[in-house]
Length: 121
Image (cartoon, rainbow, N blue to C red; front, side, top):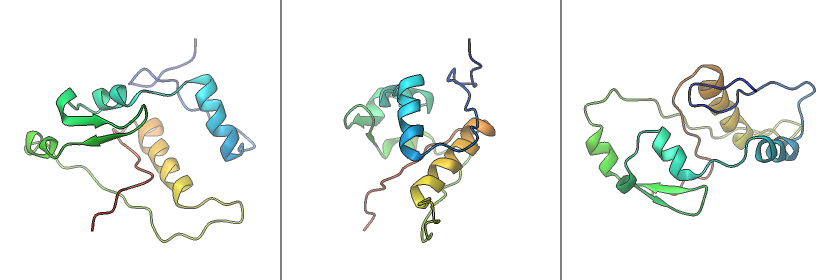
């Protein structure tokens, strides 16, 4: 039995040498599987009527959540932007996922990574 984090998911284990992006993606799906968005929403404390599933791995969150949680302490919003990729191709997406893994898996913080944020204009 593998070790689990506070949410019951397998702990991330650093690998050396670091595998390619595609290998990491394939290993996660093979070893852990995809977590349905409804399970992610439940873990984040969302009520069923506060999000709208957009396929198995995406959702739109209602602004009513902001009203329900208005008395809760505010969190942090981190935007990864304007970064030049490294020679190995690591750029904004890789940095975003790395931050989410560090905050969530390594430090035990509640966090969500949004890779493709909709326009706010």
